Length: 183
Image (cartoon, rainbow, N blue to C red):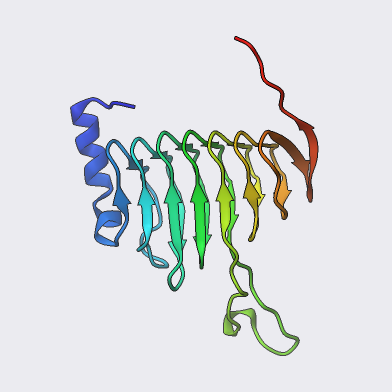
């Protein structure tokens, strides 16, 4: 995705706060306007070449958490990624708008406010190459999606699926397996 030089310069300017907070950008990668750089930490976030994260994204790492986004990946607006361990998105993926990837959750106790409790043990999330994640989908801790998986809109994915799976629902279930198609 080659941008006009003026637009590329404007993108670079918009990404200065993220660069100062530790986000590492590959060539022609861009984090859209309105990303939340004031809350949480942004170190250990790596965008490979030709990655577009649309506007109003919230990317944060906890402790030594890490976020890696592969090259030629497009991510829609209002994305949420929170990593206490690792969230890895392969190359050539498309994530629609309002998608959330959370590699941890919160602990709860009867007489203690959730604000005073730590997060749970994190488990990495791995999204394989060439996957499509539909709008408003949630990918929860410990999930691995193989190559070319399709996640339907509004799905809650709480377990792993092999390559070429089409999954949908809350919780997500296998709907079908993609077959090769001659073009």
